[in-house]
Length: 201
Image 1 (cartoon, rainbow, N blue to C red):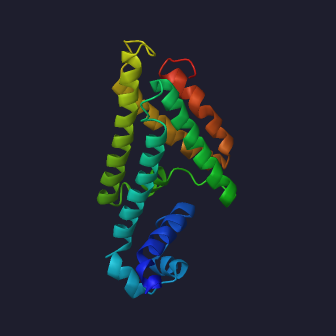
Image 2 (image 1 turned 120 degrees about the vertical axis):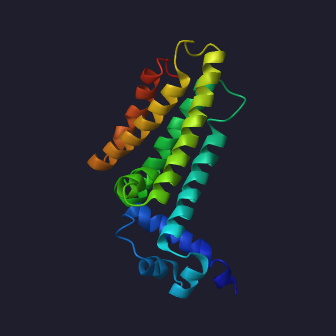
């Protein structure tokens, strides 16, 4: 009974690992079931399709980002730019940890799926667009706070800068994946500070 009760979570965990380590197109339902040690009937009991499963996988990835933000970016007991620095460092640590586990740089899960599916699956595109918009909104909130507290110049456009930060982070993740080199991530914080015309926190 316990084995059946955790079947959905095992399917989610397996899909998350397989799709992130490879691609959406290369991973089939049977492969996910084999990794999760469940029958196909169990898969379709929980998920009507691979697309539905992947949308839930995306939600899990987003929950991880939210948790990371709650522990860094959205703290209330530290100056805004210090919180931003903590968040950027945590992103780098997360990528490095996965690189060390896999032996290759897998990139950003959302960026990977966006590159692969945004012209093929509008539901997936809209979901990723919404998640990245939420990340942009969190950045904008912190930048507005930094301006209000005098950490950033008042003439800086916080909303535009937040959008540019998301674009840069996704682009840097793509370049790190292309070169299979996590050291590209060392450019993340310095470039963000230059982007928002701020000194390192």
